Image (cartoon, rainbow, N blue to C red):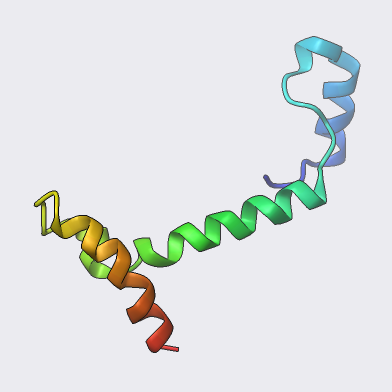
Length: 75
């Protein structure tokens, strides 16, 4: 979640329930979401999973197990 400009937050408060999402930015919730997103995006960047060339039902889960090994060894 990207922090909102101050003028947008003021307008949302002025509109009350009709203003859409809440004007507050929860830094801790954002940090937790970011950690989870980064954890899922690492394996998705691995070519074997990103392209889905191996469409067999048994090959794809095997790639999910192998991707962290390759990512960790590439460090």
